[in-house]
Length: 82
Image (cartoon, rainbow, N blue to C red; front, top):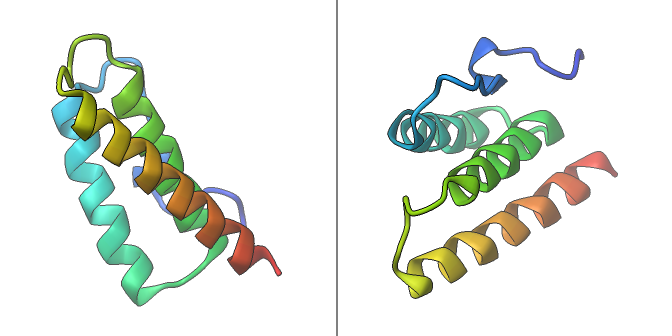
């Protein structure tokens, strides 16, 4: 299987944080149907992209929640590799 089997995996410089958040939800639903490491890794990349936008999330608790969610999906991706 290729590293990016779905076109929604790509994050472009023109994407807004809202678009990335919507795609993150779509990827999570995709993972429920197609459990593989590439989908989990794409979810991690999307969450980290949301966190990289300065000022998009000003609430520190929400930022911490997203960081924990990113770590959770990183673990899932690691489990799927084995």
